[in-house]
Length: 166
Image (cartoon, rainbow, N blue to C red):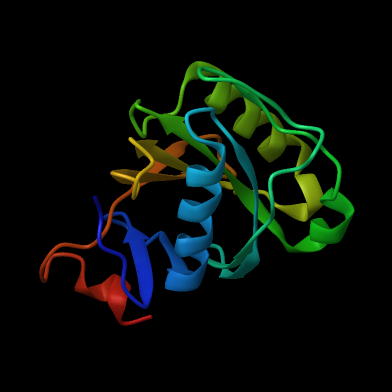
C-alpha cells in the first residue's frame, strides 16, 4: 500500500510535472474502494499553469451512467457540464491489475487529445492499480500535444528535485 502525504508530485526527465493534493488522492482511493472489485473512473479537474505543468484540484464523482464490471469500464457523460473548462484528464482503476494503460486507454486519451476536449490539448491519465484496499500504485501519463505519451514518476532523491521547486 502506498503512503500519500500532503501533496504528490509526478514528473519526467524534461520537467513535465503533475501536482495533486493529498485530499484528491484520498478521494480517488475512496471511490476506487467503493466500486471495487469493479473498475471505475471519472474526470480530473484542474489547471495548466504552463505547457509542462498540470495541477489537479479535484476529482469528479463516477458518473451514474457509467458501465463497469471487473475487467472493463465505460465512463458515462452525465455531470461533465459541471467539469467543463476545468477538465485536465481522466482517472480509472485496474483492480488486481497494473497501472499501465491498455490499448483502449491509449486510444481514448488520444481521441480526447485530438478533439481538445474542453480546450485540453495534453490530457492526463491516472490509473490506480492493486487490491484497492489502499491502492498499490498510481500510474500517471500525459498525452502530449505532439501525440507522444509520457509516463511520469514520483521523484526519488535529488535526481528529480527540480520538480519539487516549482
